[in-house]
Length: 168
Image (tube, rainbow, N blue to C red; front, top):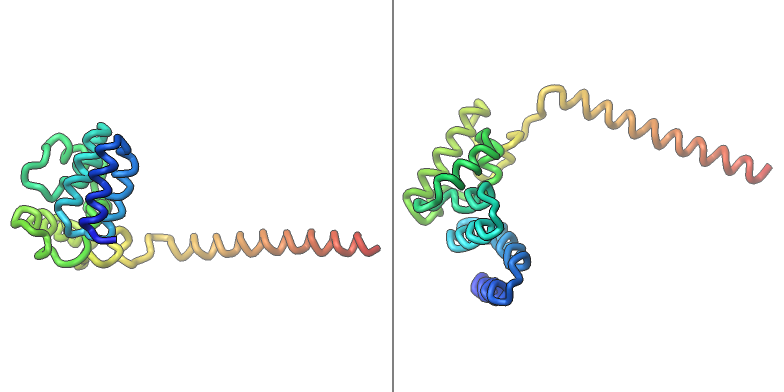
Protein backbone atom coordinates (compact mmCIF):
# COMPACT_ATOMS: atom_id res chain seq x y z
CA UNK A 1 0.00 0.00 0.00
CA UNK A 2 1.36 3.42 -0.92
CA UNK A 3 2.55 5.88 1.69
CA UNK A 4 -0.13 8.46 0.85
CA UNK A 5 -2.93 5.86 0.98
CA UNK A 6 -1.80 4.66 4.39
CA UNK A 7 -1.50 8.22 5.68
CA UNK A 8 -5.09 8.84 4.55
CA UNK A 9 -6.13 5.77 6.52
CA UNK A 10 -4.23 7.09 9.53
CA UNK A 11 -6.16 10.36 9.22
CA UNK A 12 -9.45 8.44 9.04
CA UNK A 13 -8.47 6.35 12.06
CA UNK A 14 -7.62 9.46 14.07
CA UNK A 15 -10.87 11.16 13.04
CA UNK A 16 -12.80 8.07 14.19
CA UNK A 17 -10.91 7.95 17.50
CA UNK A 18 -9.04 4.76 16.61
CA UNK A 19 -5.70 6.02 17.93
CA UNK A 20 -4.15 2.56 18.56
CA UNK A 21 -4.89 1.55 14.96
CA UNK A 22 -3.36 4.79 13.66
CA UNK A 23 -0.28 4.20 15.82
CA UNK A 24 0.08 0.65 14.49
CA UNK A 25 -0.17 1.87 10.89
CA UNK A 26 2.46 4.54 11.52
CA UNK A 27 4.82 2.03 13.17
CA UNK A 28 4.58 -0.06 10.00
CA UNK A 29 5.25 3.00 7.87
CA UNK A 30 8.36 3.91 9.88
CA UNK A 31 9.71 0.44 9.13
CA UNK A 32 8.92 0.76 5.43
CA UNK A 33 9.89 4.44 5.10
CA UNK A 34 12.54 5.16 7.76
CA UNK A 35 13.55 8.44 6.08
CA UNK A 36 10.04 9.90 6.10
CA UNK A 37 10.10 12.80 8.52
CA UNK A 38 6.32 13.18 8.21
CA UNK A 39 5.71 9.61 9.38
CA UNK A 40 8.15 10.00 12.28
CA UNK A 41 6.58 13.30 13.31
CA UNK A 42 3.06 11.94 13.22
CA UNK A 43 4.06 8.87 15.22
CA UNK A 44 5.76 11.09 17.80
CA UNK A 45 2.63 13.22 18.07
CA UNK A 46 0.49 10.13 18.70
CA UNK A 47 2.83 9.02 21.48
CA UNK A 48 2.53 12.54 22.87
CA UNK A 49 -1.26 12.01 22.96
CA UNK A 50 -0.66 8.80 24.91
CA UNK A 51 1.51 10.67 27.41
CA UNK A 52 4.64 8.65 26.58
CA UNK A 53 7.41 11.27 26.43
CA UNK A 54 10.26 8.80 25.83
CA UNK A 55 8.53 7.40 22.74
CA UNK A 56 7.52 10.87 21.53
CA UNK A 57 11.14 11.93 21.97
CA UNK A 58 12.27 8.83 20.10
CA UNK A 59 10.22 9.54 17.00
CA UNK A 60 10.77 13.31 17.11
CA UNK A 61 14.51 12.96 17.77
CA UNK A 62 15.42 14.19 14.29
CA UNK A 63 13.21 17.29 14.46
CA UNK A 64 14.77 20.64 15.26
CA UNK A 65 11.62 21.91 17.02
CA UNK A 66 11.35 18.84 19.27
CA UNK A 67 10.37 19.10 22.94
CA UNK A 68 13.55 19.08 25.07
CA UNK A 69 11.79 17.19 27.89
CA UNK A 70 10.74 14.42 25.50
CA UNK A 71 14.23 14.25 24.05
CA UNK A 72 15.69 14.00 27.55
CA UNK A 73 13.23 11.22 28.42
CA UNK A 74 14.24 9.33 25.27
CA UNK A 75 17.94 9.80 25.95
CA UNK A 76 17.49 8.68 29.56
CA UNK A 77 15.58 5.56 28.47
CA UNK A 78 18.21 4.74 25.81
CA UNK A 79 21.24 6.13 27.62
CA UNK A 80 23.90 4.19 25.68
CA UNK A 81 24.66 5.07 22.05
CA UNK A 82 24.06 1.60 20.54
CA UNK A 83 20.53 1.08 21.93
CA UNK A 84 19.70 4.69 21.10
CA UNK A 85 20.95 4.20 17.56
CA UNK A 86 18.83 1.08 17.22
CA UNK A 87 15.78 2.83 18.72
CA UNK A 88 16.00 5.65 16.18
CA UNK A 89 15.34 2.95 13.56
CA UNK A 90 17.16 4.72 10.76
CA UNK A 91 18.43 2.93 7.67
CA UNK A 92 20.66 4.20 4.92
CA UNK A 93 23.00 7.16 4.72
CA UNK A 94 22.54 10.22 6.91
CA UNK A 95 22.32 12.37 3.78
CA UNK A 96 18.75 11.09 3.29
CA UNK A 97 17.64 12.77 6.54
CA UNK A 98 15.98 15.68 4.77
CA UNK A 99 17.37 18.44 6.99
CA UNK A 100 20.76 19.58 8.18
CA UNK A 101 19.68 19.19 11.82
CA UNK A 102 18.52 15.59 11.33
CA UNK A 103 21.69 14.74 9.43
CA UNK A 104 23.81 16.19 12.27
CA UNK A 105 21.83 14.21 14.86
CA UNK A 106 22.25 10.96 12.95
CA UNK A 107 25.95 11.57 12.33
CA UNK A 108 26.64 12.42 15.97
CA UNK A 109 24.77 9.33 17.14
CA UNK A 110 26.62 7.05 14.70
CA UNK A 111 29.99 8.51 15.73
CA UNK A 112 29.18 8.07 19.43
CA UNK A 113 28.19 4.47 18.78
CA UNK A 114 31.37 3.86 16.78
CA UNK A 115 33.50 5.28 19.60
CA UNK A 116 31.70 3.16 22.18
CA UNK A 117 32.09 0.02 20.04
CA UNK A 118 35.73 0.78 19.24
CA UNK A 119 35.14 0.30 15.53
CA UNK A 120 33.12 1.92 12.74
CA UNK A 121 29.42 1.16 12.64
CA UNK A 122 26.77 2.18 10.17
CA UNK A 123 22.99 2.34 10.08
CA UNK A 124 22.55 -0.90 8.16
CA UNK A 125 24.37 -3.24 10.56
CA UNK A 126 23.46 -4.66 13.95
CA UNK A 127 24.62 -1.78 16.10
CA UNK A 128 23.79 -3.29 19.47
CA UNK A 129 26.18 -6.21 19.24
CA UNK A 130 28.07 -4.94 16.22
CA UNK A 131 28.08 -8.45 14.85
CA UNK A 132 30.38 -9.54 17.66
CA UNK A 133 29.66 -12.03 20.40
CA UNK A 134 29.25 -10.53 23.84
CA UNK A 135 31.89 -11.58 26.35
CA UNK A 136 31.28 -15.23 27.31
CA UNK A 137 28.77 -15.62 24.46
CA UNK A 138 30.37 -18.79 23.08
CA UNK A 139 30.33 -20.46 26.50
CA UNK A 140 26.68 -19.57 27.02
CA UNK A 141 25.77 -20.86 23.55
CA UNK A 142 27.53 -24.21 24.20
CA UNK A 143 25.87 -24.51 27.62
CA UNK A 144 22.47 -23.79 26.10
CA UNK A 145 22.94 -26.35 23.33
CA UNK A 146 24.13 -28.95 25.82
CA UNK A 147 21.13 -28.34 28.04
CA UNK A 148 18.74 -28.59 25.11
CA UNK A 149 20.37 -31.83 23.96
CA UNK A 150 20.08 -33.35 27.45
CA UNK A 151 16.45 -32.31 27.69
CA UNK A 152 15.60 -33.90 24.32
CA UNK A 153 17.60 -37.04 25.16
CA UNK A 154 15.79 -37.36 28.50
CA UNK A 155 12.41 -36.94 26.83
CA UNK A 156 13.26 -39.58 24.22
CA UNK A 157 14.47 -42.00 26.92
CA UNK A 158 11.20 -41.65 28.81
CA UNK A 159 9.20 -42.02 25.58
CA UNK A 160 11.10 -45.17 24.51
CA UNK A 161 10.72 -46.60 28.03
CA UNK A 162 6.97 -45.97 27.80
CA UNK A 163 6.76 -47.71 24.43
CA UNK A 164 8.68 -50.73 25.77
CA UNK A 165 6.33 -50.95 28.77
CA UNK A 166 3.30 -50.63 26.49
CA UNK A 167 4.27 -53.64 24.41
CA UNK A 168 5.38 -55.82 27.35
